[in-house]
Amino acid sequence: MKVVSHMKMSSLYMQNVFIILLTGICVSSTSHDHWGYSSEEQAKWKDNYKSCGGDSQSPIAIDSSKTVPMNMSALELIYYDSPLPGPLQLHNNGHTGIYK
Image (cartoon, rainbow, N blue to C red):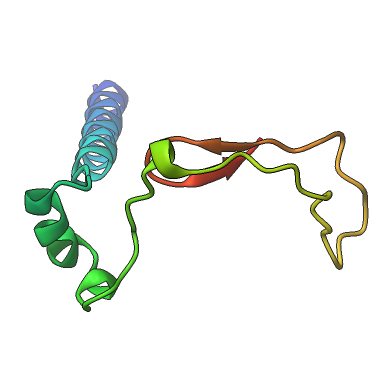
C-alpha cells in the first residue's frame, strides 16, 4: 500500500512540475511585445527596450522603396576557422537584415 501511494505522489509531483514548466515557457514566449515603426509603436520602444530610450536609437525605419540595389564585393569574415558553405544573401524581414 505504501509503494502505490508513493508512486501516485511521485506521478502527481512530476505532472505538477511539467505543468509549471510548460506554463513558464508559454508565458515567456508570449510576453515580448511586437514592435513596429508607426509613431505610436515607436513611442513604446523605450518601455520594452531600455536602450531605445534616447533621441536617435535603433531600430530605425528603412524605407525600401527609396533604397538602391547595389552589386557589392564579397563579405570578408575575419577570424573564422572554416569557410562558409556557400554564398550569403541579406534578407530584409521588415525589422532587420538577416544573412541566409
